[in-house]
Amino acid sequence: MAEVQDVSHDLGHLEWETPLFNQAITQFEQALPHAAVGDAVAERLRFPERSLVVSVPVRLDDGRWRVFPGYRVQHSSVLGPTKGGVRYDPEVDLGECAALAMWMTWKCALLRLPYGGAKGGIRCNPRALSLNELQALTRRFTSELLPVLGPQQDIPAPDMATNEQTMAWIMDTYSMQVGYAVPEIVTGKPISLGGSLFRHEATGAGVVMVIERCFQKLGTPLAGQRCVVQGFGNVGGIAAGELHDRGALVVAVSDLSGGVHHEGGLDISALRSYAEANGSLAGYDSGERVSNEELLELPCDILVLAAREDQVTGENAGRIQARVVAEGANGPTSVEADAILGERGILVLPDVLTNAGGVTVSYFEWVQDIGRLFWDRNEIRAKLADKLADAFDRVWRLAEEQGLSLRSAALVAGIREVGAALTSRGIYP
Ligand code: NAD
Image (cartoon, rainbow, N blue to C red; front, side, top):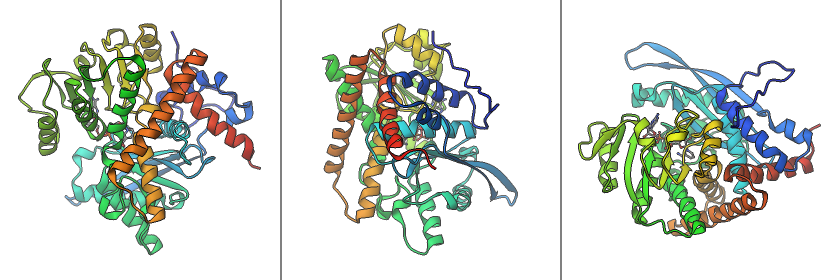
């Protein structure tokens, strides 16, 4: 069984080395022998280019002050500006941002988008903050990040517990500093500010486009497949709806409050309306309640992981009863779990491919903003489907040719693109 590698070296412990960063590095090392990049390039890519740690003071509604740690990590600017989400979560730390930034680099390169990877966030409990407090937090965080943000430098997007409104506050704060409106500083913003049609749905819809392509390769129709979806936010909620629209049977969904299960299939639009109105699935009274742990182990054809990292681990991978695991979230499957699922013949559709719909339509949004020319929804959906199908087919072929898992093949494809560009540019100076 594969183990998380010891990434220690003669430099001692590096600030961003945490279990999640070690997971990203282990995956990188596993892919590297197949990626044909030189030692110097590989060594350069093991390190994020730039990490910024800030502290964000906020005056709470009751008059007290609190200071929250915030982070932005830019992994690689070889191919263009860095791109990546901003998350508000109690578990955000430098290592998490570094791991997610590295995955973003491979994802953008795999999709052949002219970007490198970044990620950022604030360690806080967003559910305990009011809208006013979240606005103050976001605006001050943006101000602290001003020296490293820019439409040609680093472009934020939504991630866990951030949304269109958060992006609007970032866009406004940045625009106020430079003195004119800069919609292209963020993606995933409201349509009224230059956001793109279909961006809101892009990640979840992209997950299902990748699943559909996979089932085409397997020669099995997607209609009628039994699906379980963990996470019912932007990615999971949309993915569940898209699966339902294609005739698949969504038998269980969950969020932080736990899961809802009904063997005959759930009413996804009723669940989405309920979650929107009530903030979560807590109290939904149709179907049987299950815990998140139980939900992951339900028998099904497709398990969509759309909550957060580290959900399928060495501990529970042996009990997963899906045929295909689709990673809508980033890093939901540990290195140990990956090996166990592989040995058990369970196909894992890896995050860097499966959830790439979000950054792809973010790229479309940035291009539309820069060109001041906007596309219609059907055009965007079709362009996204083309991009994902092209990336999927390259990954599938590489996996077959080289006997790799789909994850390793996806990483190899991404690393090769970045490696070739860095080799041509040379390592400065
Ligand atoms: P979100 O905040 O909209 O939704 C997260 C959902 O997961 C919520 O329903 C939450 O209750 C649930 N959740 C959190 N912890 C859980 C747990 N331990 N068990 C079960 N459910 C849990 O966030 P999102 O934007 O949907 O992001 C989800 C994942 O997808 C993250 O890993 C994110 O990095 C990844 N992702 C998001 C995008 C995007 O465009 N939003 C793009 C690519 C990848």
